[in-house]
Image (cartoon, rainbow, N blue to C red):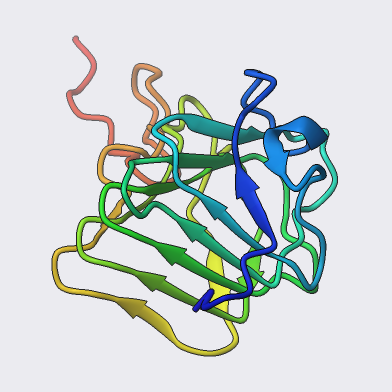
Length: 171
């Protein structure tokens, strides 16, 4: 837990919603290894795929508001713990394995990933080296976010959601 050691607080002072914009944090600068961070504003904070891996000693999403963290890159090897509070969401926008020291999803918190289209581009892929706690009333939602198999006539699907071709030729 954060206790008294909150190092960085999300402000979105620049208005660009980018994790790595220094002016969006108080004090200025994105969280680094060994620093604790809190995001508690009802907005979608983004980490683009071209960004370096995210670092933190601990990250709390939510509190009084309902933030979403949309992460399209990895987590640094030094990534710490994650807490997703009531109304907050952690949205993975990649297939990378994201390693944490521990994770807790509190009642009303959400873990999910972006909807896939024709290929597996997104997955919820979290690993905790310590405890991974999902409290009653918390949600891990991946329903209807897979990708379809082949849709060609006479061709069976392959991959999650892929079905088999039916029917027979005329003659």
